[in-house]
Structure formats: structure tokens, C-alpha cells
Length: 364
Image (cartoon, rainbow, N blue to C red; front, side):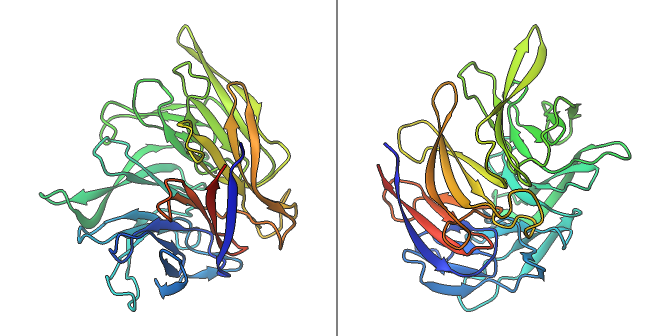
């Protein structure tokens, strides 16, 4: 049976990124989005994080990745933005009345958005920014002290650099494409094969496909159970949501594109998670409202948030919310799934230029 959802307004703020973590150490999840954090469990009390640089309809804040960066036991977060050209972390001061100091991790070029995956198997995710105009592909690894705690500093590792005239492009994913248990990197026009030593070894470029203005992330999952991972790709700046079937015969790899939803646009952020409790993940995604400020295909279409169930052959679409602009709701560039009420079900936190809302998962 389809899930039921309860939509609850949190704020009219138009930040496009949100994260869920315990800010104040009371054991209750809070919501952090842009310049503010909202105290759980009812998310009605609002506290400052820090002012965020605005540019036209955007804010220079395109991710909210929770991490105890400086090892003080409080959760900080990592972000980045297109205009600041940097990757940054905000330090949790431990006092609700104080602003969160900003620390620059490194110069990166324009950051479309940022994600984190444990690429080297150390137990702590590495931060990977998608920087479409740049030639270099880089990861940032948190430095730790002898006790295994974060030091507040990151090591920058350039794993690959494209030749002159080529760039990494719009789109980023991570997962085992090669089938050897390692964490490969997926980009717009191909994928980087992870070596045995991800930090010091040579990454191999495979220009296998053209994904267009792809989502961040591109999901790497085994859909058909054949032991070979597929790709799920959203059209971040245009129409389309597709899965790309990987086939390996006699060592030769090929890809076949299959449509999931060709009729909706701006599928910028995707998640693969079990939201109905049946033990099998679903694809959760939705339209990013005014992704390019009304200037591209599909921007003025109705808004929607959806989940898609894999049937064994294709995806079945279920609606979380849908309606015209001003009535329906979209997702921003970095949304969140978390159990906000201790119900055992994953709720959805939806930021965006159309405000910040919670969709409580009420079950079937």
C-alpha cells in the first residue's frame, strides 16, 4: 500500500540545503538549514547558525553534511557553494545564542553541491565536491589525532585531472561500478575506477557514457540482482529520470538507458532508502523548484516529491506531494531523510526556494 504523509511547515526561508543531526546534544534530532537550526522535536524554536552569502535567488550553501570536524563531541557540518569557490565547515559553538564560526577547507572552484562517502574504508566519509567547470577531481579527507578524533583540518587529494579543454561536468556519484568492492566515482561523461589504494594509487578513467546535466548524486545500485550495479540518474537541469543498465560480457562493459520518469524536470537530488519498512530500498526524489531561476525547460511545471518502487523490471511511481507552484512542494539541492519522531519510519525534510517543510511518514 502507498505511504501516507503529513506535511508540516517549518519556515519560509529559501535555503536549498538541509541536514538532520543532534545540534545541542540532548539526544533529539534537530534540523539545520542555511542560516538557522530548528530544535527538535517540534522544530518551532529557531536559532542562528550564521549569515549566508546571497546571490540573486541563491545562497552560497549547497550541502549540509554532518561531521564532528574538530573532535569536540559536537556535530559540525560541511558545505560549499558556487560563488564562494570554496569548501567550508561550520563549527558548532555549543551555545544556541552564538553564531557558528566558518572555516575554509580549501579552494575548489565553483561547487555545484557536495556529498560524502567512505572511499578508503577508514570508517569516516571523505568529502567530495562536484565542481563542474574544473579539470581536477578531488576528495577531502578529515585529519585525525592519535585518539581518532577530528583535528579540524582536511587533507586535499586530487585523484584525477582531465586534459586541457575537458572538465568533470555536472553530476557526481560513488559506488562499486567495476564489481571489485571498491568505491568508484561517477561523473557526467564516465567513471573513475578506484585503485587498491584510493589515496595514493592511480585512478583509471572510463569514458563510457554521457549523462547530461546529471543529478548529484548519481546512485550506484544493483537493481536486477545480477551482482552488477546500475546507475540511477536524474535530469538536474531539464527533463528526465532514468536508470542505466550495466552489462558485462567477456570483460566488455556496456550501458543501456531505461526511462523512469521522462515527463518531470529538475531531479537534482536523489536518495536510495527503505522508507516503507519492507527491507528493500526505494528511490526518493523530487523537483528542485526554480533550479535555474525559471530559465530552463520544466521550471514552471507543477512541483512534486515522489518515491519509486522497483518492481523487478521497472519503477512504480508514488506521490508524496504534487501541485502547482504555490500549492505543491519541491526539493532543494540537498534534502534529508531521518526518523524525527522515533517512529521507526524515515521522515522527509524538504528545503528549497519554496520554503522548508517536513513530511512525516505515517506509514501505509
